[in-house]
Amino acid sequence: DTEVTQTPKHLVMGMTNKKSLKCEQHMGHRAMYWYKQKAKKPPELMFVYSYEKLSINESVPSRFSPECPNSSLLNLHLHALQPEDSALYLCASSQEGRGARQPQHFGDGTRLSIL
Amino acid sequence: DAKTTQPNSMESNEEEPVHLPCNHSTISGTDYIHWYRQLPSQGPEYVIHGLTSNVNNRMASLAIAEDRKSSTLILHRATLRDAAVYYCILRGIIQGAQKLVFGQGTRLTINP
Image (cartoon, chains in turn red, green):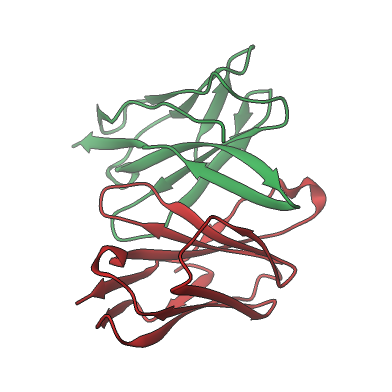
């Protein structure tokens, strides 16, 4: 069992749909992350939130919209996605401060398929 | 972003030690070396990290070269549950947040 919970585990959506991925942690971590992982490839960083503020956007297309409503929750809103956006979306969290030496804790991801 | 280079795959036998190498010749003085592993159908899992000195924990040991341009993850006695993709990562800090840039990783197969 992971301490970072992602829902749903699987999602199939059409290119015109709007959906959201959710991530939750209760470890008191103040940094949260979204990664995208294509099959047999390493995870790629998409967004970083630090103290509920967006601190890194790795030039992600605007059809992906992150939101951090509070320190425990992270959402990724999806709209008008393309078939190439099909992937495993991973959420992670970590402590901040203390030199930021603490490891990231990952959820098991949401497997997204775009029809 | 500083990059790491790892062998694509390695194979070992159960109950034997495994040495997983990583090259990071462009490492900066403030980059920490992190290792994560990803088991099938799971998210990555933290294994170990270090800066300059060798490190040990309950999962593994990390040996860091004196010039810090390479490191080796050591699993002392591999089990079948250690079969995974192992990622060597240089961890930077951008705007107060961690940035992990994953390399291609090494797929480790453990033979019974």
